[in-house]
Length: 172
Image 1 (cartoon, rainbow, N blue to C red):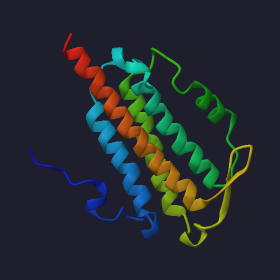
Image 2 (image 1 turned 90 degrees about the vertical axis):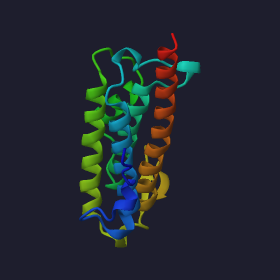
Image 3 (image 1 turned 180 degrees about the vertical axis):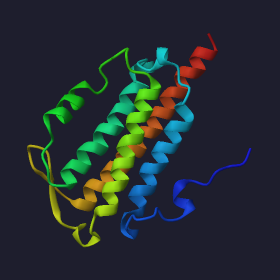
Image 4 (image 1 turned 60 degrees about the vertical axis):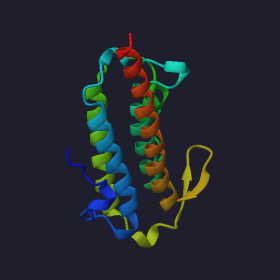
């Protein structure tokens, strides 16, 4: 089996400014890893919480939510009612959701984020931004970096949780 190089090792993402390539690479790596490794994850296990860990479904929903929220703040916009509803429902069991739906949402979210990265003037990266109703201070680059690193963190947690669940299922 031939190994595919990680996204960052394949060169620049067309149209994304050089200073934002790491954000694009990290987000695309998230999409590739989760799409590949969870493509056939059984619906019956989506909401399982081994050792009281967050479920695979929660992590996928949370990754989408965080990216969406950080990119909204990056555009200096408040969260919409729809985004607040999504946030409240992250991790709430919904048996009508399956892995295909969750991975499609992830794909759409990351595709949109990459399109947004292409529009950013890198001269604005140090500009002040704020997070949420409390107006927690940050910068444009801080929001974009956080979206990428937070997505990466939850990707790792998702893959470990999925492995625990599938190993347990195969041993029973």
